[in-house]
Length: 197
Image (cartoon, rainbow, N blue to C red; front, side, top):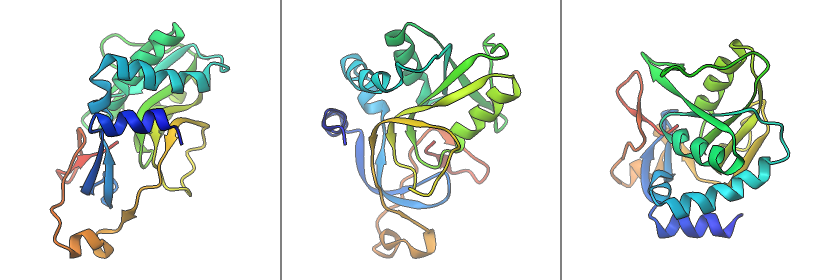
C-alpha cells in the first residue's frame, strides 16, 4: 500500500467513513472521494506521479478518462507523460466522445480513472474505444477498491489497493444500525440513485 497516497487521501478528507450507496446498489462502510485530494494541484501532481511511474513502460498514444472522475486524472497523467488526454461523457445513459474528440484506429489507449469500484465505467470506455478500432492497453487509477474476484480483462495499474467492506442491502449491518445512507458520486442512473464510478 502506498503510504504517500494514503496520507494525502486522509489529510484532504478524500477517504470518507460512514454508510454509502454504490452504483451496483450495494452498500459500503467507506468511500473514496478523490476530487477532494485532486482539488489541490500539488497533491494531484504527487499522487499521479506514483500512478504515472507504473505505466511509463507502456507505448501509450492517448489517455482517456471517463467523466467526471477521470477528467483530472487523465489530464494530469497526460501532462506528466507529455501525452494527449481526452475524456468521455455520459449522454442519455451512454458513454460517448463529444467536444470534437476523436480516436483513430490502432491508437494505443490507456484509460485513466480516479477510483475503480465495480469497473462499470472502465468497461464502457473500453468497449467504446474498441468499437472505434483502438487498442486498450489497460486502466490506471488512484485507488483500486474493486472486489478481488472482479476481472476487467485488462491490466490495472493502481496507486493503492483498498479492501473496503461491501454489503448487499438486505444484509447490510449499517442499515440494521440505522446509520444514514449517503449517495456520493456524480452519475445519476436509472432508478435516480447516484453512481460512485
